[in-house]
Length: 106
Length: 368
Image (cartoon, one colour):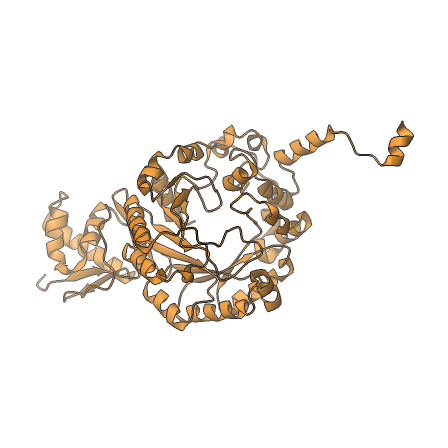
């Protein structure tokens, strides 16, 4: 992949980490999502400023035993899925933070 | 509850996480509802800083669902500051309000803050009935206007219709009003005693025949024959199951920082002004006592035919004198629904049979 991709969490959600896995609820339609540990690590790092490949290298490959290319391909699928559900924003430019940020709660 | 939500709830229970907290921001109110159980005087509400600190603690403890209620929440000048803080901590926030202070500006702000849902109390579609219950002239009109503002912002609004003697004939009208406004309506015949133990409010509750009628209204309960069917045999799972989420995955915090198992369960278990929330949640002896309640250990309810289906509220039972005992209101509901008396009702009947019968003077004289 040549161009950088940036991801940021939507402000239209509620989220809490429960037993290492992130539970997310869309405020608009109350749909609930539960992310596994790897997806949770990506979600937590989605600050709109860090490129996705850096997140994968620093948060996923560093913490979970997975090859970078495989991790990036899986992450791309995850990001597309979460973006299609409206709970993650994706851009080829850094994303300005909205009011909400995922504060450190654990 | 959806499959995933049930799984999340089970996970929270296993991890000992308080998934839901109901926080009353104030007991002050701009209505004076006839059935309200609260003392509306301010006896020293938590400050903005105290509430923000509590919210930080709740987020750390794993709380996901946060209900902000009162009293009337909008009477707090710092309401939006508190709400902003809550949403920045990513709680799923539900508001309970009479909405009479919500206009277009407030509705827009609630929308921008990503509130999950707003529950508004409406007692009747007729102003003369609703306003007589709230004791505020014009309150129905203002609440309905607020619902329209909130709906125009795309917010998820629900009408809560408490059923009591004053408005029992009006629930079809409230339902029609909800349809007209495009919002859901929930109805509840539960009347709660005052927090000081005064049970006089219970006199406002529906009679048996009114409850029977409500439970047989297809527009409310769906398939009547299913809803009112005799209870299935009580199983071991029922006997070892949890009575409700109070103290297990949910609790209540008052405007003064007092922690209780539930808003309807006034057993004090700690105060967040004196202890950390998580210390109270994990180590309160009273909460651990509540957690030990199982149907199997309850003297009357474990023998009851309704054991597996009863909506028994341990808080109402506590207010009757024993949190391991029956809740008469729920016995009444089970009886009205199925026509089968609860074990509690049967035991009261048999104990009464042994009492001396009161006779008329004439009968007493002729027997002598």
